[in-house]
Amino acid sequence: MSEERSDFRKSHQEGARSAAGEAGDGAHPGLDRLAAYHEGELPEAEAERVREHLSRCRECADLLLDWRDFARDEPSGAASAAAAAWERDRDRVREGVRRGVGAERGVDGGRSESPEGDAAYAGLRRGRRAPWLVAAAALAAATVSGVLLWQERVENRRPRQVEVASVLPEGSSVLRGREEEAEVLTGGGSRPVVLLHLGEPEEYPRYQARIVPPAGEGAAFVLELSPVPSGPLTVQLGRDPAPGEYRVVLSGVRDGERREVATYRFRVRTP
Amino acid sequence: MDPPDEHRARFDRLFERHGQEVHRFFVRQGFSFDRAAELTQETFIRVYQGLSEFRGTSTPRTWIFSIARNLSLNTRRDERTQKRLGTTISLDELGPPEEEGPSAAAALPDRSAPDPLDGILRRERSERLWRAVDELPPRMGQCVRLRLEQERSYQEIADLLGVAIDTVKSQLHQAKGRLRETLGEQFGGLEALGGDR
Image (tube, rainbow over all chains, first blue to last red; front, side, top):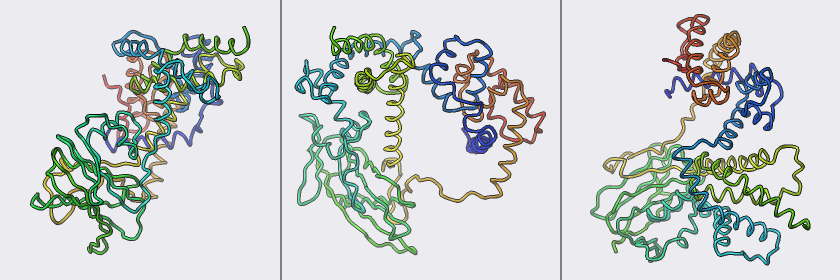
């Protein structure tokens, strides 16, 4: 959608809301009535009132579209795949529920009837508890992880930065460690990621992050952080980066003058 | 059957009847199969816990759907919050590094303030538009509001109004012509209605 079109819509959306009120056409019909409308069970006059309301009420329109997703049962490729996945997971989910209810109520001695139930329940709870950005307290900090770790976080939709070492599969080609107070990454074909946790620094109007590669491996990458991102900045270094020591130099910039605020370093080592 | 057994039997019936529906809902909401299984599990934990308080003011099906939908919305909101918090830059995509001058600026929103006069003009245009839309036949006006105000796709409009997708396109096409007659050819932005055949 073009920017102009987006602006047009935005301005008129505001106008429509102010003209008709948020709900527009009277009280919300409620889910049961919307479901009846969707199933074609309402008399035409009432259905028309629902249509008019839907055209003016985003909240109810969203609700009805979600109900459509819930109630629709047409055969399709995707639906078949989902059905197969459900067949595979149904017993595990049921056992997970039993385990979950038992653990929260303190019944069943906190034990599952099957290892699968334990795993299902534990998986769910692990995702819920997973912290994100626990290490974000400082003005800036740099950590290093590998592409395998990053991909896992994306797929799980639950970034687990501080737990990342514990979920590495055994035999992984990526190893992490510390050496002389610097993070060390060892891995073949991996892609290091630098996470900058920037907080809300106010001392300088602008900040820069400079990624300085090992000596003899070219010039630094300079990232202009203006304005400062409100959350973590992930910098992917590129595939198979040159081995050696890297530095991440954070600087504040005022009146064209740059002053170093903090420097972090890490090493990349080929296996 | 004693009460705990009855509770469990009732739950089992609901799980058998609606488990797949809930799972499919999460898949259609864009979650992976594994994630859909986890969320289905969480939904039915809540169903189990709420079953004794469920008084039947709605159908069990809409009740379970409401639980699943709230879970989906909350999960999505959490993910959006996390996504908003983060920015990713790949050095591969930045081109050659430079010793002086930035290689890239983090893609961040423009914080420039809007012009107040611009806002007034927009509001006047907007009021003219919606007055004209209110003069359209009901079905046509509904299509326009869903398209312009809610930014719905043709398919979503068709589903919301219970009509064929071709009807939606036709209604929007006609609406565009009528609104141009009313508002004038110079009234820009009506192409956002689409509906061209």
